[in-house]
Every structure is written in C-alpha cells, then in structure tokens.
Length: 204
Image 1 (cartoon, rainbow, N blue to C red):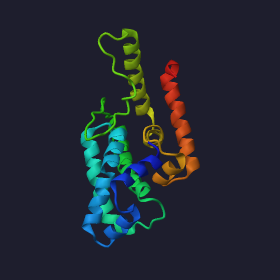
Image 2: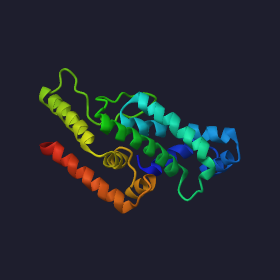
Image 3: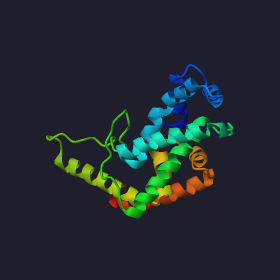
Image 4: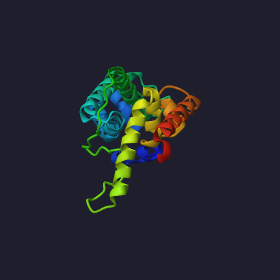
C-alpha cells in the first residue's frame, strides 16, 4: 500500500481532517483522540503484524504505540504528517523487539492473521491437493528461503525492506518514519536486497 493510498483509506473513515482531530486531541478532546485511534488502528496492527509476525507481539506493540501517542501528543508539531509520526513510534517499538529477538535468536516461524491483518506471504497461492506437486514444493521452499533471508537481515535492514516492499512506502517516507534521510534509507534497502538475493539464490 502506497502511503498516499493509506492516507486515502484513513480519509474515507473520517469526517474531520486529521490535523483538526490532532489539534482537538491536543486540547484534551477525548472523542477526537478516539477517532484518531479508530482511523489508524488497522494500519498500525497490520504494520506490527507484518514486521513481527506474531499476533501477541503485534497487539503489545499496538497498545504501547497508542499509549505513547496519548502521552506525547502535545509534542507533535506538524513538521511531518501525523501518520509518519505514528509510524515512527510503531517502527521504533518494533525495532526494539527485533533487536531483542536477534540477541535471543528467537523468531516466530509462522505469522498468523487476524483482525484484518495481511499475511505478507499471502501472495503465494496455497496449492490444492490436486495441484502440481512440483509447484507446491517450489512455493514451500521459496517461503522458507524468504523467511530465512529476512532473519539474516539486521533489524534496521529488515524494517526498511518491510516498509518498502510490504507496506509500499516510498523511500522518502521511510526515511522520515525512521528518523533518517532518504539516501540512508536507500542505502539500507540496497544492502537488504543484496542479502536477500544472496540467500534466495536461484529463486530470483
């Protein structure tokens, strides 16, 4: 999903412009804050699910992210979009989780879906019993290779790769989200892509 499309989807659920809701919430309007949560709750949960591939961890990130938003909303100065600021909070929490996993060498093998979240592997068709067994085996091996390749990325490389290829954000938006430059995001994406190609080998 391109960030522009995400904004359109949010806009379709709101009758008041996002910036007006943010200003109202900053003045203490609880209803305005709840409207912001309802507008972005699906995208936040989907992002956390796609990054962490764990429903339990994703729900924890979801709760922590909106708690941080509530506590620090008065510091938001509109120098970027509210969505970029929100995604920055979400990705920072996810980065912390990924770094901890890297240290513990723990990684969920399968991402469950729920609450409308998208499984990033759903672009690969599940083969029916009567389908071509060779193709089914190829798809299974490809999934395993991709999972292994993602685990070999550093937390920041994985974050950039995920935001670009599974969330559809542009490099400029990724840089803003991660608090860095577009060029730095581009370089990080290049490193991640090279590592992915190296692991995937003859599958790409």
